[in-house]
Image 1: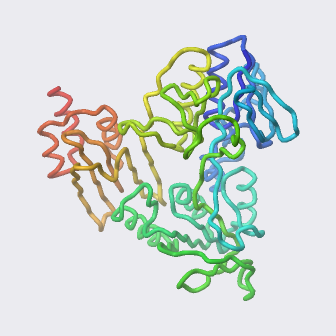
Image 2 (image 1 turned 90 degrees about the horizontal axis):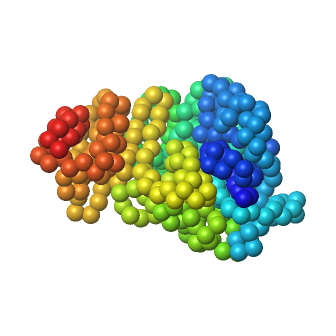
Length: 416
């Protein structure tokens, strides 16, 4: 049996190792389109902050790790997949046959249609090559503009702050991390960052990036209804989307990502998907969604590999969850943090101390939560959501005081 994996990120690496464990005699081929050893993109901000070196980003540190497992690695881009013919094509033109295929090609960064984003001095922060470029220009005191204050942008912001640059963050939305935080929490994070020396501008649209003619910096950003901004470096973090372009005419169904069933199998029986490219079951809603976080990537890689070897392992679904450190201010969002139809919510705010908690209920079950500046009991919050625990009378206690999480957990589980 020949197993081929497209993508050498966390999903692909875990899948390759699982395949080898489940089928010691099978042939396993791991294809990644970057020249470096398999690494974690989520470690790149720590590299930029100089907390680790490049080796610290590697998913497996032994240079002969895959060789010792009998896993063949190919460092080349896949350009096409023929699902019915069980072949894929590499950029070199070479064709590779497969018996089972795992699509784990992850996401790719996307940029808004703004003139000037293709010139030197403007870069994404997505690969190790990107990180090297940014490190060369993001020197202490240099003027850096970060476009995008979503989850990824906010992680990059933390690293740039530690490089002691003169940082401006521009966000089109009306708050920071709008897909993770409500208006209250997003604006608290904004004010926290401003208090810590970052110039944050929300509801700000960049219209053009062009060479600077004042001699102050390399680039000028023209913004709608705002003064121009000078920058030595522009880092674009305006979103990502699943990397599915090479799957055109492959035969697999694609919506937001590659559509899979409860066993992570695509619409073609010998092809599976995992990680950021995978549109799988969302825990608790019954919908399908792409959850681009590393724990989900690793788990879907494992489950897909189990099913590729015939183990019939059901995927329980992924819970939407985000944990963010914004210059020391910790925020979390779990599950259906925006609320559900006919649901109820409760919240507690201490704006002066940057502390906030908001809970979302469906009947007497907790289905979503946001916390800011409150690290205690966040694991319990997640547990209550995932376990679908009936809170009974403890729901009313939480409606009055949402900070009584541990009491509610102990009371509800003890009475059960």
